[in-house]
Length: 428
Ligand code: PMP
Image 1 (tube, helix red, strand yellow):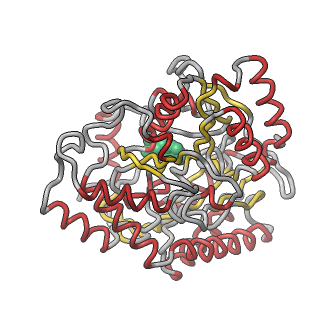
Image 2: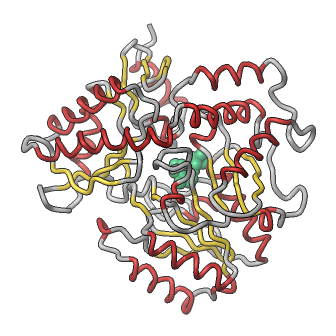
Image 3: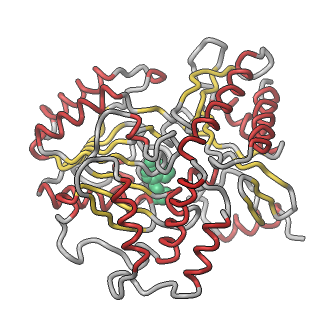
């Protein structure tokens, strides 16, 4: 039998360390919210492939749609011979767009590519080059997306200065002691010290910071950003790559707020495990680039489009937007229960809309000093007990839960019991 240990040895010699692995555990098969490793051990999946599996592993409807597409054609390149699944998906996403007026959609493969192309579109539309992002933001690992990412280690370390014209302002999060007023003041200073608003093409923001620690962008900030963008003709981009497709109890995270963005980037749960991403935006902006300026050989793969069309059907048929709130409430109840026990690690800041739930591990009960070591112990105790759990956050002390939204209640309860046990085991 292939063992995790032997695969890990092969992995270490064949694959560079630049791509990290959360666990030296190798997947063999998966179903719904469960994964089995190559040694036959079962795990409950609270990571969902990093927010990709809102509809679960191998949803039968998604697989059926993919099989049907595989029997027709798998690739023609949309730029050479276009195909209906791409058009149909663009139409469906345009209808779902979280803003008024006509929308257009262009497809890519990865989240970073969607971010790159949203910025390129904003630059072409405005004929400007500046872009503003936030500290703690994560927008991807390609050069421009990395430049927008607001965390040095590990994402930018050793990779040089990044793309010119990208600026960061502090993201307001009570856990980091930054208020909305401070963020707006930093923006005001930026406009005076570094770049005039009339030279800014776009402001990009996650409705809830994902990798940065599941911090919702305060509505007051978004209102003010919307006003600034309208005043100066800046394109406001909501990066919905982690918040999209029912995770937050709305189809898109920005729908929990009172503002409308000009463009959104989506990926991850869009295609239920197949590589697909998109920029959905106001039609008046989306046509800015010249023909041939955007695209990619695999961008909008017909197989991934077929999967995405089925994913959208599943989200509606299984009422996953509503289900996210039920799942989130159950997670929050279990974590609150654990926080009240006196034998677990110290828990603080339970938060997040819908089922985009996270909490922090801190040094003392009632305190706020991050405890990254205890967080690592929680994640290790969980995996040892058969629960795949992810941490995140700028201080590495946030536990985030991205369980599939259609997780059966019994599996969710089993996973939450394991989480509670891990929080106690890690309290050494
Ligand atoms: N934006 C956000 C908000 C993300 O969470 C991620 C991935 N974690 C990305 C962009 C990049 O997506 P990808 O890894 O598919 O390039």
